[in-house]
Structures are given as C-alpha cells and as structure tokens.
Length: 437
Ligand code: ASP
Ligand code: MG
Image (cartoon, rainbow, N blue to C red):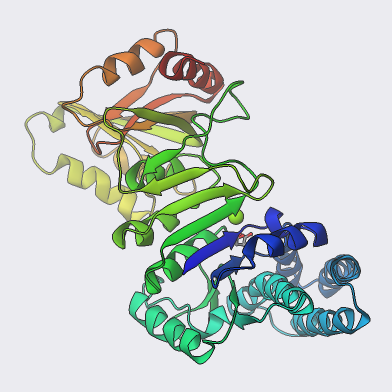
C-alpha cells in the first residue's frame, strides 16, 4: 500500500480534482488531501474577523467562499444527483462555520474553523470518485490522527486506530483522508500546523508501513537551486533523508520539514512528483547517499545574526550555557552557531523577543545585531573525510561578503550567512560553481 498526498494547488479546481482522480484510481492506496488552494487562508481571514468581534466581516468571507464551492460543484460533477449530494456536504460545513459567528470565539473554535478546508476537499473528492464508480472510503482523520500532551503526534494511537479503520473497510478500492487536521491529547479538534498535510502523509506511511510515500505538487521534485532566483536549475533525482530534511528546513518550499522524520525512522522512501507531469521521475528521498556529491543549494530569509563578544569567555566554562539559556527563556530557537575563543555568533529567524534577548545578553559581553540576513545552505554528502567540497564552496563565494560559515553540525550541510541583498549573487555563484550552470 502507498500513501499519496496532494497539496492545495493539486486539488485547487474541479479540473485539477478530476486529474487527481485519474492518478489515484487503480491501486488500493491511501490518498491524503489538503484543502483547495486559498481555502485555509480564507478560513484564517474568517476567524480574524471573529476575534475582532466583526461577524459581518466574517459572514462576507464565508458567503464568498461558499459561492466559490458552488462553482466547483457545478464543474466537478456530471449528474444532478451528485451535485445535490455535494451541495448538502458543502452546505453542512458552511452552516457549521456560520454558527461560530454568533458566539464567543476562542482558540478552540479557531481550530475547528481551520479544520473545515480539508473536510470540504476530501468530502468532494470522495463523492466525485463514487460518481465515477470507484468504491472509495473516507477515513476521518479526526478518528485516528492524534497528538499527545506535548503536541507531538502519538504514533501508537495513530497506528492502532488507523489500522482498525482499514480493517473495518477492507472492501474499499481506495481510501481518502484529510491532511493537516487531528485531535489533541484532550480530544479537541487541532492541526499539525500550516502546511502539515505532508506530515499527515508521512505519519500514515509510518503507521501502515507503506511501500512509499508520494508527495504530489506542481513542480518536478526538489531543484538544485531556487528557480525563482537562479536562471538555470535542475531537478535533483535522489536525496538522502538528511539532505532532504536540510533542504526542506532551509527553504525548499516543496516539502514540509516535519514530514521527513517519520519516513526516515521507518525507512519508507518519499517520492516527490508533479501532477502536471505525472510521468516525470521527480525526486526520490531514501536512505541512500551518492558518495561525495553536492546536491543542492537553498536559502532561508529573514535571519538575524547576534554576536556576543567577551573576554570573559576566554578559557571560561558555562559561558555558552548562559548565552543559550537566554534564548531559551524567550522561547527563540537558534539556527546557526559559530564560535571563537572570545565570542559567539548565533542566528534566529524570529525577532519577536529580540530586544529582551539583547538586553539580557549585554550582561555577558558586547552585543552586535545584523538584521536582514539570509542563510545559504549547501547540501550533499559532505562527510568530513571527503576532500574538496569546502574549497569549492568557499571559492564560489570569493566575491560575496560572508558573515558566518558553519560546518560540522551535520555531514550533509554547510551553511553560510550573507546579507539578504547578496542572496541572489551567492545563489548564482554557487550554482555556476557547483553545478556548472
Ligand atoms: N491546508 C493547510 C494549509 O494550507 C495544510 C496543508 O495544505 O498542508 O496550511
Ligand atoms: Mg502545502
């Protein structure tokens, strides 16, 4: 059995849903769907109005969104019978959303509203498949996908409940389920964070020990550089789990970073495929490395670098602990770290508590902040006993000022911190140097 996940744009219109239906029928697989593109953002807008106690504003968006869905229904189904069934499904969801415009609105209701996008898309797809004569069964994610008290997925629960559902519907040709949504440890409706449908797919893959997890989007796999910035890029055909995790974290938008871990732990290959070009090979992510090969470059924006310099660090113990503790106190994760004997530089991508952090750091040394920075990350099989990759990377950057360089935290990544204004130059230089583009 395989798990196939389709993102919002892949199910973004009636035509796209019909294309997806052709791709998923034939094998007894589990299909995970996102909300139709734009829907989750509209749901966010709706609850923004509700938090601001403006039910009229919310109702306007709800009505507009409902109209869009009526349009999709007209285009998607061939028969009056199924148009009617779909309308009932869509109406029941919009009526439910409307009930939240009449009462107190809290985080609890917010999560329920956010969950409706995936319930809409999966219900519609399931009805469409049935209209096409496919015996598809809807697996309600809220019945098996669950997080624990630390808001981490609960793999034991998921495995047990999901497998019980599959056994109860053993006769089905195909299973459709919602990405992103779940229940939390208290049984409330919750979610796996924005973009979390990829995570759903890999959690399901792990729970059923699937042969493969396929993530379908509208690009042909991960590219070796950012196609929006560098002119010539090429798809990367094979990545190690660790390489993919670095790329997903450092900017390759195609895959959510959380998705890699469950697949890696259970050694289930992940394949990135393109709905617009289903025959293309895409990118295969597995446990294999290609010896000594540099695979790709990615960039992460909106980075702030903070340097703490202090004579007190020289030969001292506990200095780094005190510095890191400050970031922990303000719940601000650190991305990159570089040190010398008398100073340490770190980067963060969340500036919310920056002023407080800087204030506290001043107790320990002189603090410098560099804003508007970008982490450029080079990914590949970069084992320390492979020779030459450091030299190629550094020589590619010979005309770009580099604020920090970090290697040795993993065997798969070298990170460079540059000014955001030099990002393009850095990505292009690395591309032409490393991939001869
Ligand atoms: N619909 C959710 C979002 O837009 C989850 C997803 O698409 O993965 O974030
Ligand atoms: Mg997505």
